[in-house]
Figure 1 (cartoon, rainbow, N blue to C red):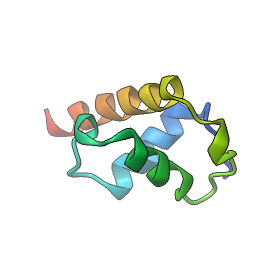
Figure 2 (cartoon, rainbow, N blue to C red; figure 1 turned 30 degrees about the vertical axis):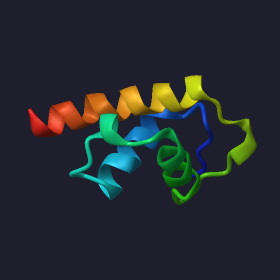
Figure 3 (tube, rainbow, N blue to C red; figure 1 turned 135 degrees about the vertical axis):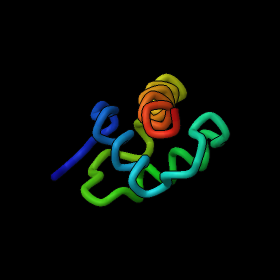
Figure 4 (spheres, rainbow, N blue to C red; figure 1 turned 45 degrees about the horizontal axis):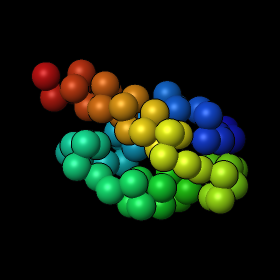
Length: 70
């Protein structure tokens, strides 16, 4: 499955699987950017990311994290 920057829900789910104990609100955007670009199936251009996109991914991941950790 191919994913791009605007697939925030899928990215969040994959990040949750790969980093289940990491609170997404503690991650620097530089690390988040790297983790996203390293996801299997990620085809997005690393240069086309911006703070708004990373924040949307972080918030989506945070929702998944809250659901999993109460």
